[in-house]
Image (cartoon, rainbow, N blue to C red; front, side):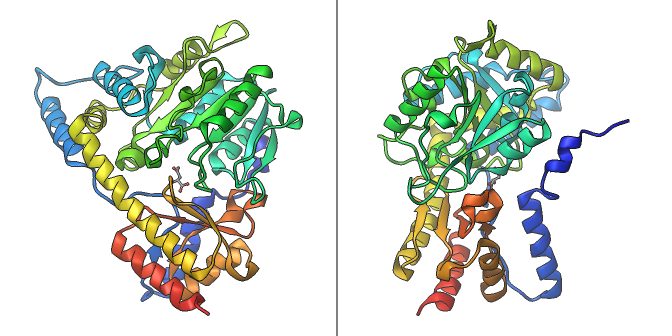
Length: 395
Ligand code: MLT
């Protein structure tokens, strides 16, 4: 037996696991510390009422021999595919066919698993800093990875040049970790670049619900030409607080082809072999999120989290700390004060303020000197965290 030696090229521990372990260690040594967690982007509000109502009704169905469901449909139940199609059309202004939507357990899984349908010889272009899943999964597969630098000069929204040519291109907008959002014009440049170089764009739209400016794109399919070069991933995790429930969807346009193969057919072939579908109860809950009632409930939750990012922006403005994101994203990407390194600021915040955040360096070399704070917390606790930061950093 031989192992996949590519695993030896990975960092020993996944970023958020590393942070959780450090936090646990600190908590053990300081049992009285009142820790406020603003690290991993996990939601704190409960599921919306419409989703829970459907979950209960669906569970009742499962308890009755006449309405019990066995294996779910591999690519999603019709009622959920219709709901997602409706969401695209009504809220985003994009028409997709239900046959182009594949329901899954979430965007993390999909952005990782999609790699099955691509040759390991493909080159990959990944922004630095980046959500670690894109990088780690390509390292696991042994692919050559190129980085495009996101930095203060380009406002953490890098644009492609000749040297960035690659077969597979990852874009996340609103971006994790920086919270910045590409405009339609910028995305059009990426789409044209992908079309000219026969590349595929893997577009992670997990945070689309946080966009509040109608001029900013919530889907890459709002950009002309994208149907010929892009796959879009989205999820109910950040949209509707499903981080613990697990449901997401991938959209692959029918016309997207490579080597004479439709990528949609390949992904469906992959999914029907390796995945048995999302549970019926969860799919019922997910569909409820995109009813008019459910949608207004999740918008309320998103607004709740927006209050956190607004409060954070106010505090950092008053402290004169430079930051990115926050306006159309649950994340604030801030420049560490006093030119501290990311992990030093992590230790400082943990020890001096009992706050856990995510060191920018964990997202890539360009993240060094930056720090990510999540706005997914409780409003009062977030205010308390900001007060602690203000007290420590106010001159
Ligand atoms: C994050 O904190 O970056 C996310 O919660 C991680 C994820 O969505 O998997």
